Image 1 (tube, rainbow, N blue to C red):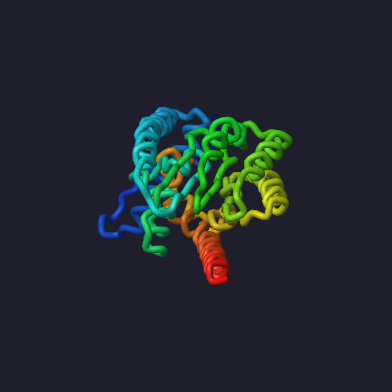
Image 2: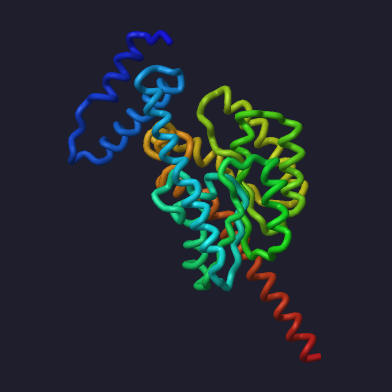
Length: 283
């Protein structure tokens, strides 16, 4: 690939420029710029950046079984509330410093704090899952559960091999089996125009299916898009695809208002049911 003089200058700047150790925000931004530049160049096969991209992705791939085992082990713990997550590697927390620093882990922590109750988390997500794989592998496991809280974030992996008919069919199959208190997220911002066109189409289908099933949709795309260039440089892991701890905090923040609404609604339903039981016994 032929690089323009300006691109060469930019690459040189972000890969060798010194950073003041006392300037943490600038250090973070510059490190992100270096990572972004090397990822773009490596994706186009430019040496030595290609090897660096492969190494970064391999490093994260090594965490896949670690995160999966962590969630399986923690699903065995008891809890007064049951939180079930359907999703892909983002729900697994790939790119985070620890599995519980994924958006699922952060939501679970907030549920414990806001309700004062223990929470059991059954994370059905699988790294690399598409909507088709979620229908095949996650829905059968979901059917035997009676969750108090449900989050769904799936579909990002469909963009690479985009088939709108297949996506629409699968997302409707997933939503048809969710309880009304489930909270579903639209696809996050991909930033690159050729992917964003597909994401926009996917999100239109997703929101239409959610309306038909009466489900609340989290505006994850808008939340991540608003982060802009600073978000691109500071909220992604080494592979420049998965979020890091800061990125997952943005995801958790996006889910929070919808989950708070669901919890309020379910508390009202519980109080109404309790009142009816008391009235029947009094009669």
